[in-house]
Structures are given as C-alpha cells and as structure tokens.
Image (cartoon, rainbow, N blue to C red):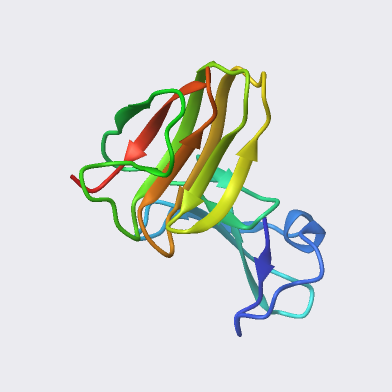
Length: 153
C-alpha cells in the first residue's frame, strides 16, 4: 500500500497516516477502500486498502472477467493454434499437463514464451495475453496437455 500527499507525491512510509487521526474511510468510484488523514505538516494523505486480487510485489490488480474455454493438445503436435483462428490479445490462463515424457513449448505467434520440461505433470499457470499472434503449443511424443483460456473462435 502506498500513501500519497495532496499533490500526488508518494509519502515516505505509511507510519505517518497511522500516527494521525483517520479523517474518513470510504469507497471510491471503483469500489476501492480509501483512508484519508492529515500528516504533521498539514498535508492530506490518502491510503488505499489492500484490494482483492492485488499483487503488491508487481503493483497490479489481477481482475479476470468472463469464462474460460479449453483445448486439448495431443502428442506430437507442432505449433497447434489455440482457438479456431487465434490472434494477438488471446488470454492463456493455464496449461494442464496430463502425460509428459517430452517437452511442451508455448509460443506467442512465432515467439517461444516457455518450454515446460519433460515429466512436469500438473497445472502450470500463465495468466498472460498474447502480444504477437495466436497462442501455439508444440508437444513431444507421448506428451499431452490441455490449454485453458480465452482463444479467438
């Protein structure tokens, strides 16, 4: 959580707000809880409460709307397009690996984004939007997976 003064400058730490009387607690237009207080210099400080889905490490909020679809990728496939057409902007939520004796390569268009090693069964989260084209998956022999996300039909 960050504190900002009335001019939008980030405060040095949030101890100042905690030491002062909280003037108000309210929800802003986006439903985010905010606390306002005044520091020892008379500057108004605004503190944003932790929001559901907030990733404080990367300073982002993960908000996912809508439903996912899935597509199975059989063994020995080369750059199988996810979705009927696939395009930049498609969302890859996760890869579920059901059989794996070889690698699985995830591509954004022609760009390799990840190579999942052999034997890595389970769910691999991605939560990423394609930037350069359709999501593609290449599987080795005896390696199968299911891609979950929103892919252009």
